[in-house]
Amino acid sequence: MDADIPMCGRDPESPYVELAVEVFAMLADATRVRIVLALRDGELSVNHLADIVDKAPTAVSQHLAKLRLARIVATRQEGTKVFYRLTNEHASQLVTDAIFQAEHALGGTPAHHRREHAEVTD
Image (cartoon, rainbow, N blue to C red):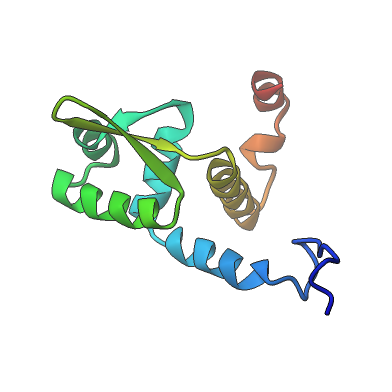
């Protein structure tokens, strides 16, 4: 009946709310958050990611498979190597905002509010 009336995704009645919860659930793992942070600047191989997040390549591969199913990461194959990248900037922004919220939870002035940090990100 209302199918042709577009609904804002940020409306409390939005059908995207449940999907957003699934994204939060997917990112509710420290290794996956570290993987998203590592992929902010571009694509990396499983072994490189494993070194960065200090986990076994097999464990990182399993996390990447879940992130891929959730369409948070995509792949590119070059010979026998597979490279992973973020599919868009939103997962990175979501993780960044969560880190900023965590900084606020510690009290004081978070690093992201300090003048020297603001100049670097502008």
